[in-house]
Amino acid sequence: MKIVLFGATGMIGQGVLRECLLDPNVEAVLTVGRTASGKHHEKLREILRQDMSDYADLAVQLTGLDACFFCLGVSSSGMAEKDYERVTYGVTLAAAGILSRLNPQMTFVYVSGAGTDSSEQGRSMWARVKGKTENALLRLPFAAAYMFRPGFIEPLHGATSKTRAYRIFYAISKPLLPPLRRMFPNQILTTEQIGLAMLAVARRGYAKRVLEIKDIRALLGT
Image (cartoon, rainbow, N blue to C red; front, side):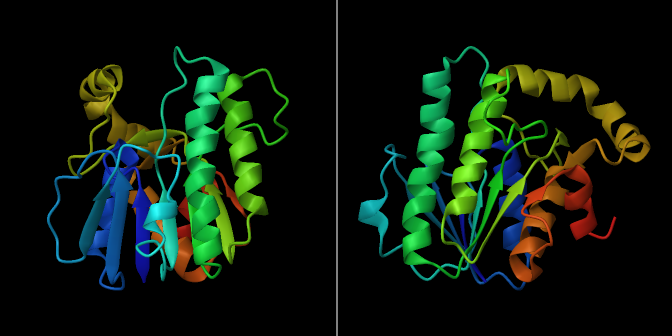
């Protein structure tokens, strides 16, 4: 399987990249982002670019891929809706649009979030924009597209958030997360679980196109 990964330097993306590189059935991983992952592996190739709104010049590199794991995203905190939509919807659909044209056989997996508003009409700004993004992705002519809606995420294996406040929170709460995950298995996922679930859905699909936490766990048989 040949995979393209967007957002490999974010907390979730770091976990997903790790699982892709460890998987013997993954032949190659191409990452696209503004900064390098810092990883060195024979499977890994990275494309660095500042303009994440247009990928026409990458058509050759983005052809012949089996799956896309789209983990790129920003926090909506302090952002105006138009700015959040420009990044969350605009950047995602720019990538998905060209990938669907070049790789109609592709499986596209998008990291959304628990509480996303599929109606696009709710009061929560981030949930509306995420819902709009999900709906647009599901209309594209991919072989299959899946929306992952994780809730609280526990970083493992050195994965770290780019957001300072989140890093402080995770550092303080780290001792509590393993027991909380055991007590509330349908509320907390790890970066490792998300990566493994993405690989699983890319290989064998799933009955639902929008996956909540319990569905992501079901992919792993847990």
